[in-house]
Image (cartoon, rainbow, N blue to C red):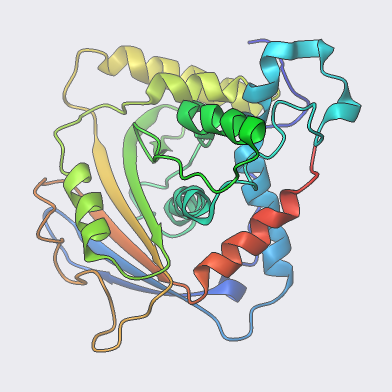
Length: 306
């Protein structure tokens, strides 16, 4: 694999999540096992949390920026990064609030998968985020730059909102986690239902498995990328014609509105009625008042970044 970057795909560490979020877990014995995760923002958030979270989000989008710049290769002078001569100018911070909420929801799903959704049997890892596959966003970015209309809405990305995998001691993938994410300023039961309905589909292998391998190539060819590419390629060949891949599901719902008559928006003891599959399911919700301001403050830091 050719090294196309001096930046590793390894995610920046998040050491202060407990200073940001209070987590409450409710699980049944199954089968199939169902867990509900409720997150609330603490009243006195350590300001250092936002620095860590920003670094993590910025890194998650780095592959997409490199994809935008790749066609120009070495002809793109470093001094042009972050300027209007940069193909990645405006990405992702200049998108509308709705688009940024979609990005944020996918990243929070990945964080929850890695830091909270492990069940003792499976410890989930997100190899890389898939924003580089959002071609519609890239097309609309170019249109917005040429028309100077930065208020356009973009449609959601097709495929998997997020993918996580569990590996054994030998680095072989033994299970995968399909993630669906929604983030909204006001509560929407429709969005929750859409998450669970999509997760119910009879898909036994990750739709974007090959795209994960490609996305890893945007980063440095280090032990992290090589280990994941080897594991993912092996997994693809093992399950190319198989319907027996061990799949689990995660629904992530980030909402700026807190329930007033009950504690949660999502059922805590049994799956949502739109979820009709019979797999291990985790439904997570994050109550984050002022979510649009939180997201905008994080993404605005990217203005002028290279």
